[in-house]
Length: 160
Image (tube, rainbow, N blue to C red; front, side, top):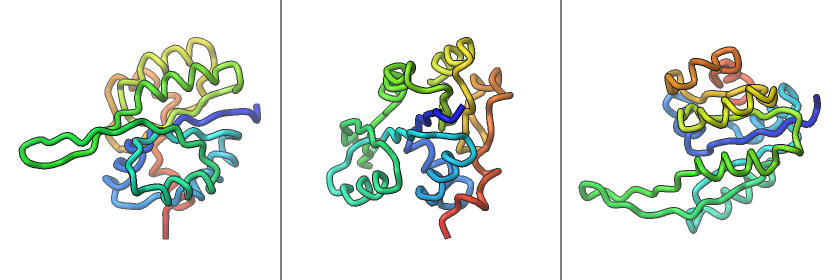
């Protein structure tokens, strides 16, 4: 089983790690996924914001396949916020790639992936769900045997 793919919700990962008080080293995380879970391809789902091209290039140099979603600038109570929800893209690409991998590693704490995770479990195609937050969606509790908190690997993947 050395042909596993990772499907990563970039915003959920970034915010979750930051919420736990540390910063992720994306290069170390990619190596970790390869070594620990035999991930041959890691898809990073991220909202595209003009001006961040150097960051995207860095992700690609670190071994990620970036899947971009157009973003919207939304104003709420006088504050501008950039929205680029990648849930549909992550589910779609997981299914497009389905015949090409042995097992999937999903990186997100989001309950919106419940149906995807359930589908992968039923077909013995889920390896792990790496949750970047201490508190993850209660919808995912059913899959607790697959869930691991990223904080357990902090010493190996923290940016220093």
